[in-house]
Length: 87
Image 1 (cartoon, rainbow, N blue to C red):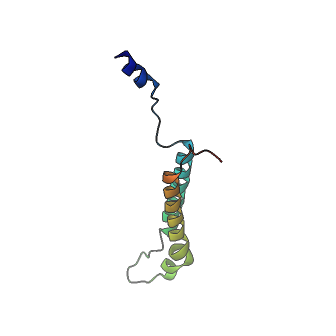
Image 2: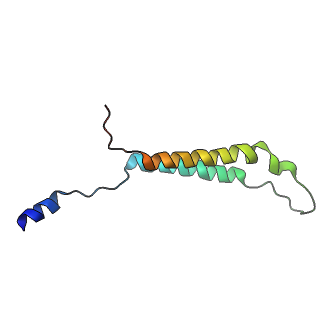
Image 3: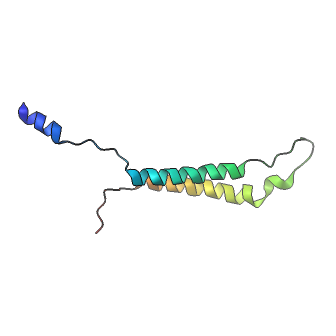
C-alpha cells in the first residue's frame, strides 16, 4: 500500500500546453480577429443604392488571408511540442 502512495506522489500533473503554445494561440486569435474586423463594413444605408466599396481589396483579399493565416497559426500552436529536445 505504501508503495502505491509513493508512485502517486511522484507523478507530477502537467498541463498539455505550455506558455509557448498559449503565446502562439493568442497571436493566432489576434490575426483572426483583425481579419474579421477588416472584413466588416462596406454596406449602404439605403438598400436601393449599390456601394462598390464592398468589393475592395481589403475585404476580398486581405481579410480572408489574415483569417486563414490565423487558423494556420492556431493549428501550429496546438501541434507544437514545447518539450521537444533540440538535437
